[in-house]
Image (cartoon, rainbow, N blue to C red; front, top):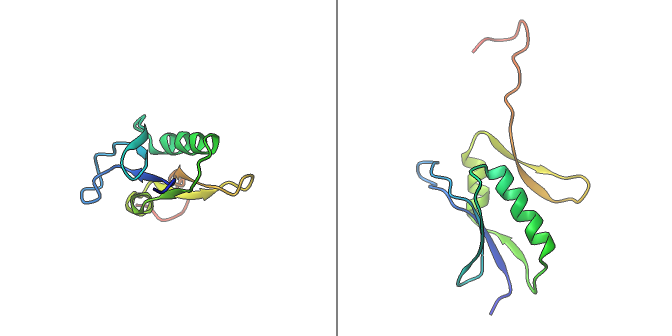
Length: 103
């Protein structure tokens, strides 16, 4: 049996709603769920926990992780220069420049 753990973002990929947390699972069971309601906090907490709990396999992102980042206009991937890992971060809308185009 695989020692891998699978990381999933639980949300409705059709409606882009109903975010229900970041989960870590084996092939047969959920190991942990992180759900504060803020995906960036949940993802960071999940990453911290996984780094602190080495396993005899790999932590693997399921397609829902990339789908979530692609589907949601207010989040993106950001690589941490210190440890080389990528995290999901919230995108802050840029402030309109004076004399620039108006919405």
